[in-house]
Length: 350
Image (cartoon, rainbow, N blue to C red; front, side, top):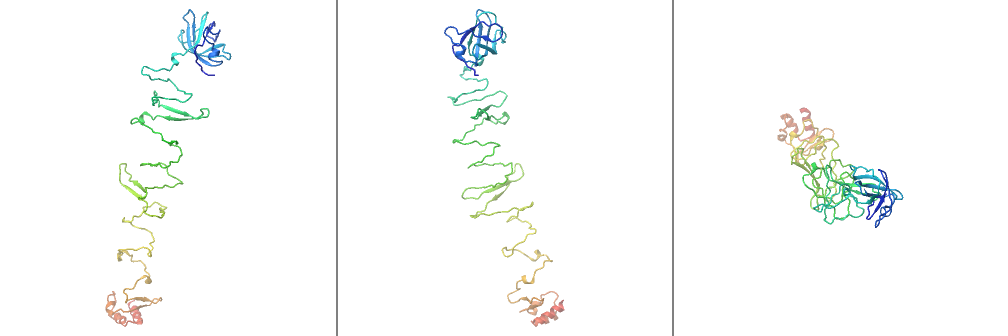
């Protein structure tokens, strides 16, 4: 069933009351409802009593053979816009276009559509601008899918409170798919300026590239809302890949130039050099193996034989005198410069 409007459709009827009007055939130079509207279709109608004041306009439905017209909806009538109980006499029934259903240009050549606008084919707007206005709600444009209009994608204007001025959205210049706010999509070759990530990135890596002449970097700003201070993490200027593993517990990273205390760390002495180390930096309880001590001088070595005895070479009594608590008797024994003499002197001292 479709709503059909056609020219030169007019018949007569002698039906009385408010029921369906039985059609009595076309008047001269007109066609029947069957020919102009079609069986079981709807149309807009007008009925008037010849020689009387009774009239009615509305939307009517033809039966399966187009012999009767049921007055489905009344728009205007001589009975306060209700169905008219027609008196006896001949009535003219014809197809018309009620003013309330007409779409026309106003004095400014603008057209106002009171409800939904359905276009059977392409819509061509020669002026180049379509204004979608609404009252009390945000304007919406819906695009339906190709399968029986089962689904639609809706473009909706922002709420009034969200506007700071008119906005313009420019579509891509090539065939593409727009990015959705909540959709899971892959962005290709996009530049994100000062982005904010509100959801952790899981099971994925982040690559930061900054051109061919500088390394990628991350900037961490301070906790103040208006703060401008930041810590910057910069990739190394290297042609080889490097991996930095963060501590597995809450901690503070050590800086190259920062003054910090390193706790419970093992330093490989073969590959690291410690500068500015003084006696005060070594604990009194530190145990340093004798074999780790270098010669006092090239010619004055304290040499252990591995069993606890120590031999001294090229040491004079004057030099030994610098040792705290050493007596002249011990110096005399040491001055013999023999292993036995040194051993006796050590025994006496102990």
